[in-house]
Image (cartoon, rainbow, N blue to C red; front, side, top):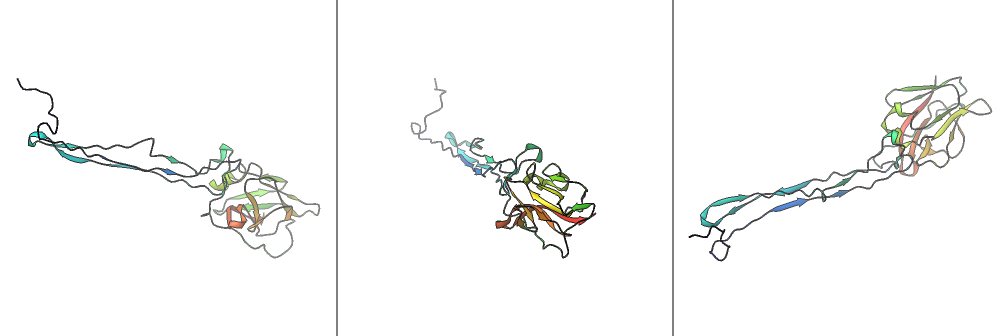
Length: 213
């Protein structure tokens, strides 16, 4: 009686070759988190590929052994994207963000009863009283509000009645006025640009232009 067991390749002279190629790629991008999203975060996607191979079996019968494997554990992408504004985290400003600095307009400090902040897309916010600015209040101007701290700076009137910007100490990213870091109270002029970022890298996020309302 014939033995139904599969012959051992080498005992019967018939060999079986099995080729399977697998490709796994992993990408790891740094993740940064603080109270605000630091302005330097990026994410890289990783994919895995596999190649099937054909194999000729014993007795002249052709067989195709396709082995496609994707190692879920090896193909990983650590997202280093900025966190949503609600998450309460702020990541460093990324180097691809453009600087939004502008020279102050000529003239004295603003003394108007009401001023406006104007976003890049034309959104406006009117202020008539002392107003702390942070990620929640500037959210209407765009997603880059996530690089602002909950309390980034304050716009208020000084003793002379002129509007000024006062930075909040200890923020994750710098408060910028016309591209320069604000380290103490500074008067506001028509056309000044307030933003958040890193002055030394020329990065300014969510620029808001000061106008008389």
